[in-house]
Length: 226
Image (cartoon, rainbow, N blue to C red; front, side, top):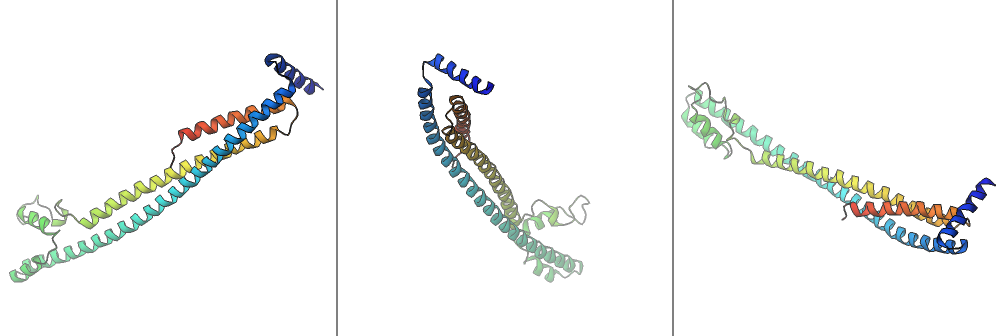
């Protein structure tokens, strides 16, 4: 009885403040409810669409990152093989020089890969036999650069950046999913309001739905879109 009387007093205050009867208030609330349902339905569809797009973007970025890492590993393998070739040829050259076989030394030197030659010449120019400060081998000098390894490093950096873009897309997609749930609550409360004849109950449900709708729409406006 106390609860019923409080609702009655609330309805009377609304009628007195705005000059509308209970029936007129119910008509207003029905109109507002219909508007909320329409806007919420559109916003829910848009939010769900964006969630799907961002989830697709996440999958694309993760796939791209995986492909880049595979290519990076392939280039690292090529670089490792080239290092082995360079080290073997350089070792053979050293052995020929130690054996004072100049013809064999020249034979190996002529077969140095182009990437080894600048480092080898810089190493010879440092006079390693008499200069204690010289590098122990050409492979320690900055002139020894492997294009395959540099490409592998570049691909790995690109893969890491692409993977992070996928993580970001996943986070945005999750936010849109949450926003879709919030907008679905707007549909729920707006629809539920029509099942009650009591004005205060209807009004309370509509206010809750309206607050959720404003939050959902403001969220959509601030989230990135694709």
